Image (cartoon, rainbow, N blue to C red; front, top):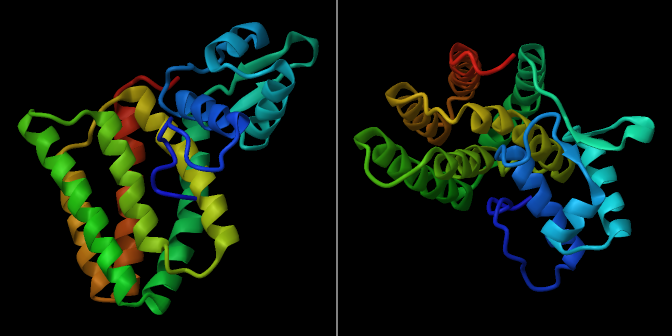
Length: 228
């Protein structure tokens, strides 16, 4: 799964259905399609310019990722959110990401280190803009937050693990996008510290920091009072 997976434009070789799948999925993650919104096939067909049969295939894929639910004869809805759901997906993210991080620290080469540094540079630039109130928005931060965490685990040498983690990470990001609130200097400092621990190959300390980082993110999201 590529770091630009939220981009709505297609790339060479992609079908119309693949582009529409990514657009609908991204709209759910970014909160443009809100929890429990009814997904009417006729409306989606007009909005995303694909056939009803293609839409059914797309919605089936999104059901398997738990972004969409089907309710018998009542049709399709965007999956609900809850505090318990946030805790559950955060636990699953940590289970996958800590394992992948430890493997990457053990297996990563110089190119991997360079990718980690580059991804953090982009993330920190956006975080600095958020902190001084200039250019960036939370949606831009979310994209680069994914890019950095993806880079740190990209040397784990397990495509299946990376694919599963990507889907789970997106379900976690959905909660961030629904509250639209950046955690501030603490989050930025933790990212910089995680970069340094990863590059220094300090596995135990990096894993401990990642656990604390995700836990603090969960507490921040819940602290907004926007998750029922």
